[in-house]
Image (cartoon, rainbow, N blue to C red; front, top):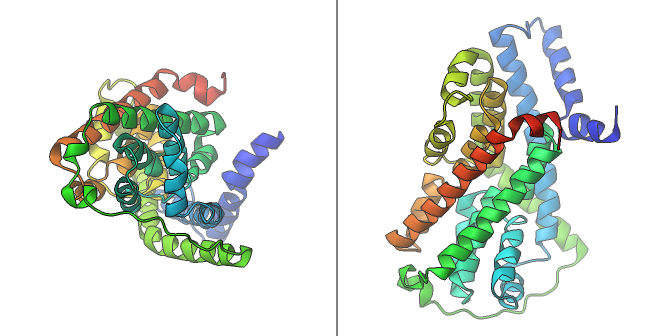
Length: 337
């Protein structure tokens, strides 16, 4: 086995854990090829795998994030202008909170600090859509090529979407309480290594408590799809014969609320049952970026016209990404590129 295959299947995909769980359940008398046994196997393995990756990723990213507190991030972003500011803002979003609702307070803080509106929207789009967690999780399921291209296209959506919003001069559509707020730079003490480690541990525990119920829900739905829903149903609804599969997946994903860790097992199960790659990725993007709770929160900070523009730009980008992945699915999965 090549080194990269070992990393993808054994370290990231944790196939050793799948085998270990399967052996343990078989010893208890469960038939892993049956619906009940297969569902339990899928649930236990995926729940453990995603939880382990969640804790490790959040700890690492939180440690890195301790070097970029909000005030410092504002100062860094304020030094850049034009397209480079959008790119930096989108990249900053990859090391910030995993869900869209957690990103909105930072978006409001950046806007209050006087950063250009388009730049702050580049951050808001990028943060939940293409965090480092999505890169690692997608690598564990679909491989490195798919994960890297997914993140790259997500960053393109964030940069382009923010630039469009900035060019349209939508500042008047920000609610007055955000625009009128005063912003003061506060010199924060530089934390020690021990304090950074403590911060990372606290962030890991706090995020785990918030996210774990969604992981269980997502894995449960994935187990049902994987073992109880006929493959023909999924292929008809989300397969290559349905030209509207990407659009349907995007629309269905918007009202839901979960982060990348909760949507991954659902996407994995849908793909295994015959859904197209781009369709399941569009579903994931819609859930993490345009969830209904986050849109309700964002509405408190921006007026309907700006909210509608944000939804339209993100939805168009998500649908386009889904179509691109569907068009080149065979080459991406088979590793031709």
